[in-house]
Length: 115
Length: 114
Image (tube, rainbow over all chains, first blue to last red; front, side):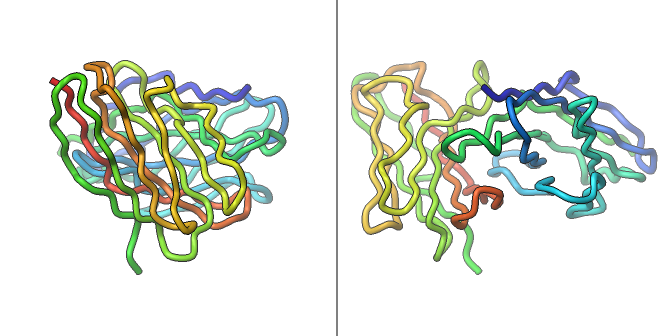
């Protein structure tokens, strides 16, 4: 079975400060890991993914995430947050060894960036 | 190019009625997925189609839910005898064939069952 935990329901940060959204995962094998962002009344928008290779993954809009196998984490980071980054963020995992291609999502973390 | 499209964007129905939700995937994507997003359950996988293979229906919550994909492209999710707990946003996604490929999501259909 595969699972994802996002321990924070909400993260508040001042504009210009660093932003971190936490994600830990559990799979029986090796993971594919994804981050998506959802703006109000919109679908999920892909930010970045880890498949293999460098543990530090760079994605859209200045976001990056670091894969840490020993801590089974894939935290999303942005060095300097913008008010427009306020949205709902989802971490997702897929077990490489599992049959099928379904993603398992975390519960989501709402990010509020204050001016 | 065009992304995943879904229709209708909103659907209000009465308890007991049947509804059909439509998804048009990105052209050339062979894999198509349905997920449900609800307040109590978060984002849940429903069903997955890959080419001509038998679909993975492991996420469908009851036999009132079914889906088909015609001609390897458009998909329809049907909910029979809707219940209030079916109220949610139904999201469709598509991806190319490789297992590591990104799933691209449509805007969703918001279903409200009165």
